[in-house]
View 1 (cartoon, rainbow, N blue to C red):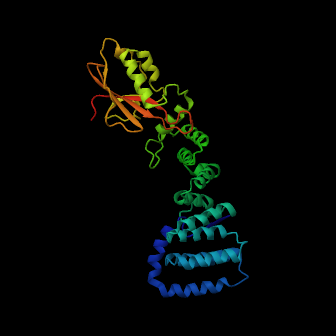
View 2 (tube, helix red, strand yellow; view 1 turned 90 degrees about the horizontal axis):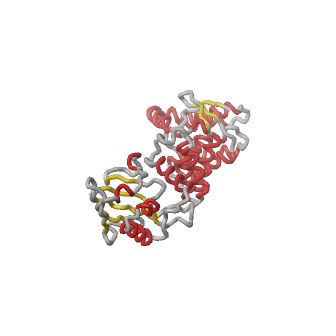
View 3 (cartoon, rainbow, N blue to C red; view 1 turned 45 degrees about the vertical axis):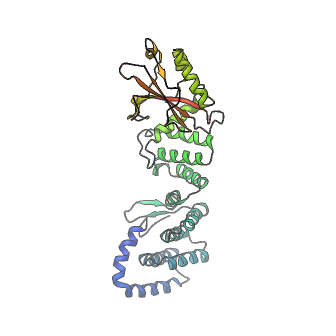
Length: 349
């Protein structure tokens, strides 16, 4: 079903109508009386009733008379449950609650529409058609604070409106919601689907500037055997120090993380492709006298630690070995363990 409406998003119509109608307030009041009177005619066709109601609703919106608008629309839906346009009237009701800063009530109505009413296709002033369900899902994702509900809404967008959205972005946001709920199996699946999209590496996601690298690191870690991790920071520190003391480059190579290990200056970004290194320690140990501090650097925290070492090269003498606590709840056996995640070249800035 397709019908023309005053504006898809409602906001522009409210602003424009408010300016125009404020100059003709008396005329508008008289018009509203006439419209209400016409609406009492029980012989009205569905299309005529819709046109009259739309005009009344637009007038109320232009005056920001949201309370009367809500009463008018909800009363109609209750009295005429068979009205084919009820999904649209409830959408306007939800919008009115949004304008009154009553987001939980607005969420209730948007959710009620997608779960209890067939979708409607509306035509905006620009001539483009829009789905009521699609608009409701967009609003719900913006205002809902419940991860479980947001998971439902994201999945509905993917299944019902794949051509209207950025699939890559939605899969990434869906994965994050699964993370919040501790549903790691589903989160991993969503991240894999995100990475499978052609634009995954280039898509711009608000608030997630490193979405691609984060997802790739997580999936790479998930698919690895994780045999380089240590149960504690102390165990990792002692193993690395022992290997350095013995000039055992093979042991050091085993201790290095096999996923996303980096070697870079302090000014570089860990996610920079140039910082990802896969080299053997052999070439830096032969012929050199390597030293390390007895204690970890004072800037170390409960989740990150730095070991200052030197003697590796005449070009960059000092290396800080970077140890990191593994944050991977999807694997309880490895979550909370420690890994040697990278190297920072040079003295700390």
